[in-house]
Image 1 (cartoon, rainbow, N blue to C red):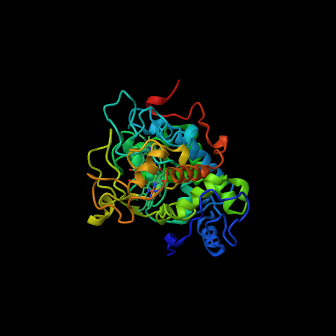
Image 2: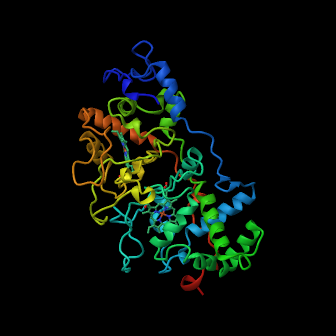
Image 3: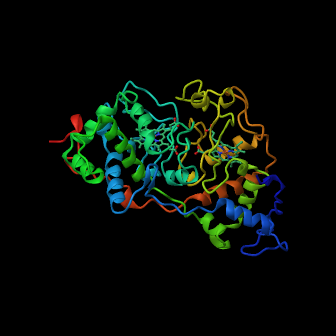
Length: 391
Ligand code: HEC
Ligand code: HEC
């Protein structure tokens, strides 16, 4: 492991666009060797949206599977109230996070519902393909690492949509496919079997795969920072370049936010307080592992597109990037959190200028908007089931 704290951080204000003003130092901050290591560490690997968790699918079958998944992502028939879909909490118009008002943690169904709130802040599904590529078949999905693929998160989504826990909801999920002539036909075409003859569990697993195939296309990894890392010094401004040096150096952010997704995909306690509609206590990762040390630990978040995906932290406790940076300047949470805070979080000696630079850097991690054709509702008028069926 590389000890980033040895990285030398340049003198503020001396960074000149595209030029190395201290001999041998890249952007006044990194030796050529450090810069090469950073490039190796942070460059996004080749991504294949059809390399699904169950194996690689050939085109054009993979495209048809993803197309089915896109329709299902907008489909409210999976929910108990017939009015909630994945898009309710993963808004295609807002980087697939919960864009509703009062979205600190996600509301489970509609306002009329008595089901109340989910426990946590919805995670953007943009770049789940990058996560899967970096940690294939590892249980890294959700804040606590409950599932090994993005499609498997369907089980949790169903409870957020008012359905019973799996396997009790296998039949209702299979029913959505079977009761819609359009879905049943697409299913038969893609899986080469009839949903009517397949078991409920089989159809459920196939639906998981359709969701995965769709979500794996929702990638945005071509941010200005990536162009800078690849050698285009003008892709980000001086302030953001200084901010990157803070991120790697005195900010020690890269200790945990490392790799091409800016996350080690590990679980740490940073002492985030439980606030607002979040439950008073969230045990975190210990729920999955039963290891007492995992109490209060949550997955390090990816920082890609971070400027667009607030509120922040597992319970949405922090509203803005400025709040997040203040949180770290103080050394993370202060008191009253579950578990033991990671010892690496100690108060940071950052100036207000450093903090502004750091935020400017974080803002360079926003990639291109997701292809609009992946953000529209492709459902046929007849693709509906149960209560949501229009005449
Ligand atoms: C009521 C709001 C809500 C709905 C509806 C919902 N989600 Fe989520 N989603 C969340 C929340 C909250 C989390 C974080 C859960 C956790 O970590 O405990 C999440 C997390 C996820 C993740 C994990 C992403 C990652 O990087 O780990 C995926 C994938 C996902 N949802 C997919 C879906 C799909 C597919 C659907 C529709 C079948 C769906 N969600 C419906 C709120 C929702
Ligand atoms: C000890 C590991 C560690 C270090 C060091 C660290 N982080 Fe984090 N970061 C995490 C974890 C874990 C979370 C999720 C915490 C939670 O939700 O409870 C997180 C969450 C975040 C989030 C919110 C992401 C979201 O989608 O909600 C941002 C932004 C962030 N960190 C930025 C930074 C910056 C900037 C630094 C350096 C000043 C930093 N982090 C240092 C582990 C770390």
